[in-house]
Length: 128
Image (cartoon, rainbow, N blue to C red; front, side):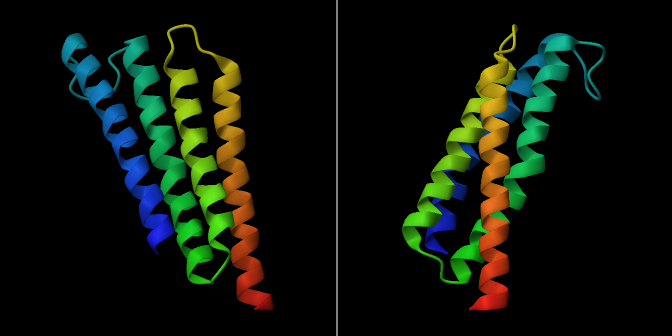
């Protein structure tokens, strides 16, 4: 699982950065739980939550595809696409005036990785 480990390790700092950004706004707004009606906090919370909702499942599928013996070059393309997609989504959605194109590109990349890795897992499970 070296390929999946690489992309998990590359994605982990992004998750930490997103979490620290939430904490910073929480402190500034003095909000311990929830968003306290603070729009900036709500946006940062959703950016981090979106990452937490999609990345673990994508990495799980990548790990399963790797375990099924799919081509390393393909797994690297998928891992790099996931990383680029999550960076794009986080940047686009984090802007005060959201850059919708980056958000959409990031989600498209993420959904694409999930779809392709799911197909690889299905292929590996049924046809190999």
